[in-house]
Image 1 (cartoon, rainbow, N blue to C red):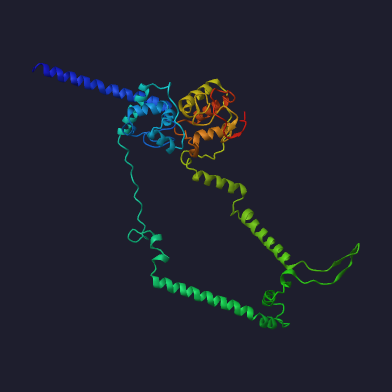
Image 2 (image 1 turned 90 degrees about the vertical axis):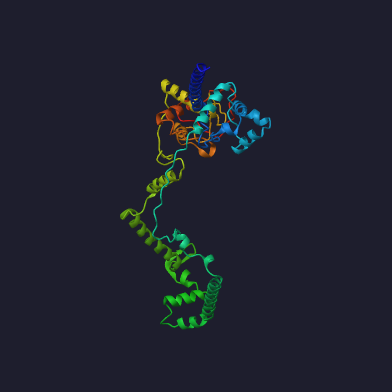
Length: 403
Protein backbone atom coordinates (compact mmCIF):
# COMPACT_ATOMS: atom_id res chain seq x y z
CA UNK A 1 0.00 0.00 0.00
CA UNK A 2 2.84 2.36 0.79
CA UNK A 3 4.17 1.89 -2.73
CA UNK A 4 0.72 2.44 -4.32
CA UNK A 5 -0.03 5.77 -2.62
CA UNK A 6 2.74 7.77 -4.38
CA UNK A 7 1.57 6.46 -7.75
CA UNK A 8 -2.02 7.53 -6.96
CA UNK A 9 -0.87 10.96 -5.92
CA UNK A 10 1.19 11.30 -9.08
CA UNK A 11 -1.77 10.19 -11.20
CA UNK A 12 -4.07 12.78 -9.53
CA UNK A 13 -1.45 15.49 -10.04
CA UNK A 14 -1.10 14.65 -13.75
CA UNK A 15 -4.87 14.53 -14.15
CA UNK A 16 -5.28 17.89 -12.45
CA UNK A 17 -2.60 19.47 -14.59
CA UNK A 18 -4.21 18.07 -17.74
CA UNK A 19 -7.65 19.50 -16.87
CA UNK A 20 -6.56 23.13 -16.47
CA UNK A 21 -5.06 23.55 -19.96
CA UNK A 22 -8.24 22.12 -21.51
CA UNK A 23 -10.33 24.71 -19.65
CA UNK A 24 -7.93 27.47 -20.67
CA UNK A 25 -8.07 26.26 -24.25
CA UNK A 26 -11.89 26.45 -24.18
CA UNK A 27 -11.71 30.03 -22.96
CA UNK A 28 -9.28 31.00 -25.71
CA UNK A 29 -11.53 29.43 -28.32
CA UNK A 30 -14.52 31.08 -26.69
CA UNK A 31 -12.86 34.49 -26.94
CA UNK A 32 -12.41 34.04 -30.70
CA UNK A 33 -16.07 33.02 -31.07
CA UNK A 34 -17.17 35.92 -28.83
CA UNK A 35 -15.18 38.50 -30.82
CA UNK A 36 -16.56 37.21 -34.11
CA UNK A 37 -20.21 36.93 -33.12
CA UNK A 38 -21.03 38.69 -29.86
CA UNK A 39 -18.71 41.67 -29.38
CA UNK A 40 -20.81 43.91 -31.61
CA UNK A 41 -23.63 43.92 -29.06
CA UNK A 42 -22.12 42.63 -25.80
CA UNK A 43 -19.24 43.20 -23.45
CA UNK A 44 -18.39 41.36 -20.25
CA UNK A 45 -17.86 44.25 -17.87
CA UNK A 46 -20.22 46.87 -19.31
CA UNK A 47 -23.52 47.21 -21.15
CA UNK A 48 -23.31 47.96 -24.87
CA UNK A 49 -26.37 47.25 -27.03
CA UNK A 50 -27.22 44.16 -25.02
CA UNK A 51 -26.65 43.48 -21.31
CA UNK A 52 -23.25 43.04 -19.68
CA UNK A 53 -22.38 39.34 -19.48
CA UNK A 54 -20.38 39.41 -16.24
CA UNK A 55 -21.30 36.39 -14.05
CA UNK A 56 -24.02 35.30 -16.48
CA UNK A 57 -23.03 31.69 -15.66
CA UNK A 58 -24.05 32.38 -12.06
CA UNK A 59 -27.31 34.14 -12.90
CA UNK A 60 -28.54 31.66 -15.50
CA UNK A 61 -28.12 27.89 -15.81
CA UNK A 62 -26.23 26.49 -18.76
CA UNK A 63 -29.26 25.00 -20.53
CA UNK A 64 -31.09 28.34 -20.44
CA UNK A 65 -28.05 30.13 -21.93
CA UNK A 66 -27.79 27.54 -24.69
CA UNK A 67 -31.48 27.86 -25.57
CA UNK A 68 -31.42 31.68 -25.47
CA UNK A 69 -28.31 32.03 -27.65
CA UNK A 70 -29.56 29.54 -30.22
CA UNK A 71 -33.04 31.05 -30.56
CA UNK A 72 -34.11 33.76 -28.11
CA UNK A 73 -37.38 34.42 -29.95
CA UNK A 74 -38.47 30.81 -29.47
CA UNK A 75 -37.67 30.97 -25.76
CA UNK A 76 -39.58 34.25 -25.41
CA UNK A 77 -42.58 32.84 -27.27
CA UNK A 78 -42.64 29.92 -24.85
CA UNK A 79 -43.32 32.39 -22.04
CA UNK A 80 -40.02 31.93 -20.22
CA UNK A 81 -40.09 34.59 -17.50
CA UNK A 82 -36.36 35.40 -17.59
CA UNK A 83 -36.27 35.58 -21.40
CA UNK A 84 -39.30 37.89 -21.51
CA UNK A 85 -37.74 40.10 -18.83
CA UNK A 86 -34.51 40.53 -20.83
CA UNK A 87 -36.50 41.10 -24.04
CA UNK A 88 -38.60 43.90 -22.51
CA UNK A 89 -35.71 45.51 -20.65
CA UNK A 90 -33.66 46.01 -23.80
CA UNK A 91 -36.24 47.65 -26.03
CA UNK A 92 -37.99 44.48 -27.20
CA UNK A 93 -35.24 43.85 -29.75
CA UNK A 94 -34.69 40.10 -30.22
CA UNK A 95 -31.18 38.73 -30.03
CA UNK A 96 -29.72 37.36 -33.25
CA UNK A 97 -30.41 33.63 -33.58
CA UNK A 98 -27.25 31.49 -33.71
CA UNK A 99 -29.05 28.19 -34.17
CA UNK A 100 -27.22 26.34 -36.91
CA UNK A 101 -24.18 28.64 -36.86
CA UNK A 102 -22.92 27.87 -33.33
CA UNK A 103 -22.86 24.44 -31.76
CA UNK A 104 -23.47 23.71 -28.09
CA UNK A 105 -19.71 23.31 -27.70
CA UNK A 106 -19.07 26.73 -29.22
CA UNK A 107 -21.54 28.37 -26.84
CA UNK A 108 -19.99 26.55 -23.87
CA UNK A 109 -16.58 27.84 -24.95
CA UNK A 110 -18.01 31.38 -24.92
CA UNK A 111 -19.40 30.74 -21.42
CA UNK A 112 -15.93 29.61 -20.33
CA UNK A 113 -14.46 32.83 -21.73
CA UNK A 114 -17.10 34.96 -19.97
CA UNK A 115 -16.45 33.09 -16.71
CA UNK A 116 -12.72 33.71 -17.01
CA UNK A 117 -13.27 37.42 -17.72
CA UNK A 118 -15.80 37.69 -14.88
CA UNK A 119 -13.34 36.26 -12.37
CA UNK A 120 -10.69 38.83 -13.22
CA UNK A 121 -10.39 41.54 -10.54
CA UNK A 122 -11.75 44.89 -11.58
CA UNK A 123 -9.15 47.50 -12.38
CA UNK A 124 -8.70 49.93 -9.53
CA UNK A 125 -9.69 53.45 -10.48
CA UNK A 126 -7.67 56.27 -8.96
CA UNK A 127 -9.95 58.90 -7.58
CA UNK A 128 -8.91 62.46 -8.17
CA UNK A 129 -8.67 64.55 -5.03
CA UNK A 130 -10.54 67.78 -5.54
CA UNK A 131 -8.56 70.89 -4.63
CA UNK A 132 -9.60 72.62 -1.45
CA UNK A 133 -11.47 75.85 -2.10
CA UNK A 134 -10.52 78.51 0.46
CA UNK A 135 -13.93 80.14 -0.04
CA UNK A 136 -15.66 77.04 1.32
CA UNK A 137 -16.47 76.93 5.00
CA UNK A 138 -16.48 73.54 6.75
CA UNK A 139 -16.65 71.76 3.41
CA UNK A 140 -19.73 73.70 2.28
CA UNK A 141 -19.79 75.00 -1.26
CA UNK A 142 -20.14 78.75 -1.93
CA UNK A 143 -23.64 78.14 -3.23
CA UNK A 144 -24.62 76.41 0.01
CA UNK A 145 -23.12 79.24 2.05
CA UNK A 146 -24.95 81.92 0.02
CA UNK A 147 -28.34 83.56 0.52
CA UNK A 148 -31.36 81.30 0.89
CA UNK A 149 -34.90 82.65 1.47
CA UNK A 150 -36.01 79.45 3.17
CA UNK A 151 -33.09 79.66 5.59
CA UNK A 152 -34.32 83.00 6.97
CA UNK A 153 -36.31 83.01 10.23
CA UNK A 154 -40.10 83.37 9.81
CA UNK A 155 -40.12 86.80 11.46
CA UNK A 156 -37.49 88.05 8.98
CA UNK A 157 -39.49 86.67 6.06
CA UNK A 158 -42.63 88.49 7.28
CA UNK A 159 -40.68 91.73 7.77
CA UNK A 160 -39.13 91.60 4.29
CA UNK A 161 -42.51 90.83 2.72
CA UNK A 162 -44.10 93.75 4.60
CA UNK A 163 -41.38 96.18 3.47
CA UNK A 164 -41.80 95.01 -0.12
CA UNK A 165 -45.57 95.53 0.08
CA UNK A 166 -45.15 99.05 1.50
CA UNK A 167 -42.70 99.97 -1.27
CA UNK A 168 -45.18 98.72 -3.86
CA UNK A 169 -47.97 100.81 -2.28
CA UNK A 170 -45.76 103.91 -2.26
CA UNK A 171 -44.89 103.35 -5.93
CA UNK A 172 -48.59 103.01 -6.88
CA UNK A 173 -49.48 106.17 -4.92
CA UNK A 174 -46.73 108.13 -6.68
CA UNK A 175 -47.95 106.97 -10.10
CA UNK A 176 -51.55 107.95 -9.27
CA UNK A 177 -50.44 111.31 -7.87
CA UNK A 178 -48.39 112.02 -10.97
CA UNK A 179 -51.30 111.36 -13.31
CA UNK A 180 -53.59 113.43 -11.11
CA UNK A 181 -51.11 116.30 -11.34
CA UNK A 182 -50.80 116.11 -15.13
CA UNK A 183 -53.28 118.96 -15.79
CA UNK A 184 -51.30 121.25 -13.50
CA UNK A 185 -48.06 120.21 -15.15
CA UNK A 186 -49.66 120.80 -18.55
CA UNK A 187 -50.52 124.39 -17.61
CA UNK A 188 -47.03 124.85 -16.19
CA UNK A 189 -45.21 123.65 -19.31
CA UNK A 190 -47.63 125.41 -21.66
CA UNK A 191 -45.79 128.66 -21.12
CA UNK A 192 -43.92 129.90 -24.22
CA UNK A 193 -40.55 129.62 -22.50
CA UNK A 194 -41.06 125.92 -21.61
CA UNK A 195 -43.30 124.77 -24.45
CA UNK A 196 -40.53 123.17 -26.55
CA UNK A 197 -38.58 121.55 -23.74
CA UNK A 198 -38.30 117.71 -23.62
CA UNK A 199 -40.24 117.62 -20.32
CA UNK A 200 -43.07 119.65 -21.85
CA UNK A 201 -43.29 117.20 -24.77
CA UNK A 202 -43.28 114.25 -22.38
CA UNK A 203 -46.10 115.73 -20.30
CA UNK A 204 -48.07 116.51 -23.46
CA UNK A 205 -47.59 112.90 -24.63
CA UNK A 206 -48.96 111.59 -21.32
CA UNK A 207 -51.96 113.87 -21.72
CA UNK A 208 -52.74 112.39 -25.16
CA UNK A 209 -50.89 114.79 -27.46
CA UNK A 210 -49.03 112.45 -29.88
CA UNK A 211 -47.54 115.21 -31.99
CA UNK A 212 -44.17 114.48 -30.37
CA UNK A 213 -44.20 111.10 -32.12
CA UNK A 214 -46.38 111.63 -35.17
CA UNK A 215 -45.53 115.28 -35.85
CA UNK A 216 -47.92 118.09 -36.72
CA UNK A 217 -49.83 118.44 -39.94
CA UNK A 218 -49.22 121.69 -41.80
CA UNK A 219 -51.74 122.78 -44.43
CA UNK A 220 -49.11 124.42 -46.62
CA UNK A 221 -49.35 123.54 -50.29
CA UNK A 222 -46.13 123.30 -52.26
CA UNK A 223 -46.01 125.39 -55.37
CA UNK A 224 -45.98 123.54 -58.70
CA UNK A 225 -46.57 120.19 -56.92
CA UNK A 226 -50.05 119.46 -58.23
CA UNK A 227 -50.56 116.44 -60.49
CA UNK A 228 -53.92 115.25 -61.79
CA UNK A 229 -55.75 116.99 -58.98
CA UNK A 230 -53.44 115.57 -56.31
CA UNK A 231 -51.89 118.24 -54.06
CA UNK A 232 -48.63 117.81 -52.13
CA UNK A 233 -48.27 119.43 -48.73
CA UNK A 234 -44.99 120.57 -47.20
CA UNK A 235 -45.02 118.30 -44.14
CA UNK A 236 -42.04 116.91 -42.29
CA UNK A 237 -41.48 113.19 -41.88
CA UNK A 238 -43.03 111.80 -38.68
CA UNK A 239 -40.60 112.04 -35.75
CA UNK A 240 -40.89 108.30 -35.02
CA UNK A 241 -39.67 107.55 -38.56
CA UNK A 242 -36.75 109.94 -38.24
CA UNK A 243 -35.79 108.54 -34.82
CA UNK A 244 -35.74 105.02 -36.23
CA UNK A 245 -33.62 106.17 -39.17
CA UNK A 246 -31.16 107.86 -36.83
CA UNK A 247 -31.01 104.65 -34.76
CA UNK A 248 -30.17 102.57 -37.84
CA UNK A 249 -27.37 104.99 -38.75
CA UNK A 250 -25.88 104.70 -35.26
CA UNK A 251 -26.27 100.91 -35.37
CA UNK A 252 -24.57 100.72 -38.77
CA UNK A 253 -21.58 102.70 -37.51
CA UNK A 254 -21.30 100.49 -34.44
CA UNK A 255 -21.66 97.34 -36.57
CA UNK A 256 -18.93 98.51 -38.95
CA UNK A 257 -16.52 99.28 -36.11
CA UNK A 258 -17.30 96.08 -34.17
CA UNK A 259 -17.10 93.55 -37.00
CA UNK A 260 -14.93 95.08 -39.71
CA UNK A 261 -12.63 97.68 -38.10
CA UNK A 262 -11.76 96.33 -34.64
CA UNK A 263 -12.80 92.76 -35.60
CA UNK A 264 -13.96 92.13 -32.04
CA UNK A 265 -17.00 90.14 -33.25
CA UNK A 266 -17.32 86.92 -35.25
CA UNK A 267 -18.81 87.01 -38.71
CA UNK A 268 -21.12 84.24 -39.95
CA UNK A 269 -18.37 81.83 -40.99
CA UNK A 270 -16.54 82.19 -37.67
CA UNK A 271 -19.80 81.76 -35.75
CA UNK A 272 -20.57 78.59 -37.72
CA UNK A 273 -17.14 77.14 -36.97
CA UNK A 274 -17.55 77.97 -33.28
CA UNK A 275 -20.97 76.29 -33.19
CA UNK A 276 -19.57 73.19 -34.90
CA UNK A 277 -16.78 73.03 -32.34
CA UNK A 278 -19.29 73.44 -29.50
CA UNK A 279 -21.50 70.70 -30.95
CA UNK A 280 -18.51 68.38 -31.14
CA UNK A 281 -17.86 68.96 -27.43
CA UNK A 282 -21.48 68.25 -26.52
CA UNK A 283 -21.59 65.05 -28.60
CA UNK A 284 -20.94 62.10 -26.26
CA UNK A 285 -19.15 60.23 -29.03
CA UNK A 286 -16.70 63.06 -29.48
CA UNK A 287 -13.61 63.94 -27.54
CA UNK A 288 -10.08 62.81 -27.85
CA UNK A 289 -11.37 60.08 -30.21
CA UNK A 290 -12.37 62.49 -32.97
CA UNK A 291 -15.09 64.81 -34.14
CA UNK A 292 -18.41 63.52 -35.46
CA UNK A 293 -18.85 66.83 -37.31
CA UNK A 294 -15.55 66.53 -39.15
CA UNK A 295 -15.69 67.34 -42.84
CA UNK A 296 -14.68 64.31 -44.94
CA UNK A 297 -14.48 63.94 -48.70
CA UNK A 298 -13.97 60.22 -49.19
CA UNK A 299 -14.75 58.44 -52.41
CA UNK A 300 -16.01 54.83 -52.42
CA UNK A 301 -13.21 52.32 -52.87
CA UNK A 302 -13.49 50.12 -55.95
CA UNK A 303 -10.36 47.94 -55.71
CA UNK A 304 -11.30 44.28 -55.33
CA UNK A 305 -8.74 43.54 -52.54
CA UNK A 306 -10.00 46.46 -50.44
CA UNK A 307 -13.64 45.49 -50.97
CA UNK A 308 -12.76 41.92 -49.94
CA UNK A 309 -11.09 43.29 -46.82
CA UNK A 310 -14.19 45.38 -46.14
CA UNK A 311 -16.37 42.30 -46.60
CA UNK A 312 -14.25 40.29 -44.13
CA UNK A 313 -14.44 43.06 -41.53
CA UNK A 314 -18.18 43.41 -42.14
CA UNK A 315 -18.86 39.68 -41.63
CA UNK A 316 -16.73 39.61 -38.50
CA UNK A 317 -18.12 42.75 -36.85
CA UNK A 318 -21.41 43.75 -38.47
CA UNK A 319 -23.12 40.53 -39.50
CA UNK A 320 -24.50 39.92 -36.01
CA UNK A 321 -26.84 42.91 -36.37
CA UNK A 322 -27.08 43.44 -40.13
CA UNK A 323 -26.81 39.87 -41.45
CA UNK A 324 -23.99 38.22 -43.36
CA UNK A 325 -25.37 39.58 -46.64
CA UNK A 326 -26.45 42.96 -45.25
CA UNK A 327 -30.11 41.91 -45.29
CA UNK A 328 -30.76 43.35 -41.81
CA UNK A 329 -31.45 41.51 -38.55
CA UNK A 330 -31.55 43.73 -35.47
CA UNK A 331 -30.06 46.56 -37.53
CA UNK A 332 -31.54 47.88 -40.79
CA UNK A 333 -31.24 46.38 -44.25
CA UNK A 334 -28.12 47.77 -45.94
CA UNK A 335 -28.85 46.54 -49.47
CA UNK A 336 -31.84 48.72 -50.38
CA UNK A 337 -32.00 52.39 -51.38
CA UNK A 338 -33.28 53.67 -48.05
CA UNK A 339 -31.06 55.19 -45.40
CA UNK A 340 -31.57 56.41 -41.84
CA UNK A 341 -28.51 58.69 -41.78
CA UNK A 342 -27.62 59.31 -45.43
CA UNK A 343 -26.37 57.05 -48.21
CA UNK A 344 -23.15 58.85 -49.15
CA UNK A 345 -19.91 57.03 -48.33
CA UNK A 346 -19.02 59.84 -45.90
CA UNK A 347 -22.35 59.43 -44.09
CA UNK A 348 -21.87 55.68 -43.79
CA UNK A 349 -18.26 56.20 -42.66
CA UNK A 350 -19.30 58.52 -39.81
CA UNK A 351 -22.12 56.24 -38.65
CA UNK A 352 -19.69 53.32 -38.43
CA UNK A 353 -16.93 55.35 -36.80
CA UNK A 354 -18.94 57.31 -34.23
CA UNK A 355 -22.06 55.14 -33.92
CA UNK A 356 -25.64 56.17 -33.18
CA UNK A 357 -26.08 55.46 -29.49
CA UNK A 358 -29.79 56.27 -29.42
CA UNK A 359 -30.49 53.48 -31.93
CA UNK A 360 -28.09 50.87 -30.60
CA UNK A 361 -25.37 51.39 -33.21
CA UNK A 362 -22.04 51.21 -31.40
CA UNK A 363 -18.97 53.26 -32.35
CA UNK A 364 -16.25 51.22 -34.02
CA UNK A 365 -13.45 53.78 -33.98
CA UNK A 366 -11.64 51.97 -31.16
CA UNK A 367 -11.70 48.59 -32.90
CA UNK A 368 -11.37 49.48 -36.59
CA UNK A 369 -8.87 51.86 -38.14
CA UNK A 370 -9.99 54.68 -40.41
CA UNK A 371 -8.86 52.69 -43.46
CA UNK A 372 -10.84 49.65 -42.31
CA UNK A 373 -13.95 51.78 -41.72
CA UNK A 374 -13.66 53.20 -45.24
CA UNK A 375 -13.29 49.67 -46.61
CA UNK A 376 -16.42 48.53 -44.76
CA UNK A 377 -18.32 51.63 -45.92
CA UNK A 378 -17.32 51.01 -49.53
CA UNK A 379 -18.29 47.35 -49.28
CA UNK A 380 -21.73 48.31 -47.93
CA UNK A 381 -22.28 50.59 -50.91
CA UNK A 382 -21.10 47.83 -53.25
CA UNK A 383 -23.90 45.49 -52.17
CA UNK A 384 -26.66 47.96 -53.03
CA UNK A 385 -29.41 46.25 -54.99
CA UNK A 386 -28.12 42.73 -54.28
CA UNK A 387 -31.61 41.75 -53.01
CA UNK A 388 -30.57 39.01 -50.56
CA UNK A 389 -33.23 36.54 -49.34
CA UNK A 390 -35.23 37.38 -46.21
CA UNK A 391 -34.28 41.04 -46.48
CA UNK A 392 -35.65 43.32 -43.80
CA UNK A 393 -38.26 45.94 -44.72
CA UNK A 394 -36.95 49.34 -45.82
CA UNK A 395 -36.26 51.98 -43.14
CA UNK A 396 -35.50 55.67 -43.47
CA UNK A 397 -35.64 57.78 -46.60
CA UNK A 398 -34.61 57.05 -50.17
CA UNK A 399 -31.20 58.56 -50.71
CA UNK A 400 -29.13 57.42 -53.65
CA UNK A 401 -25.49 57.10 -52.58
CA UNK A 402 -23.03 59.21 -54.52
CA UNK A 403 -20.76 57.18 -56.74
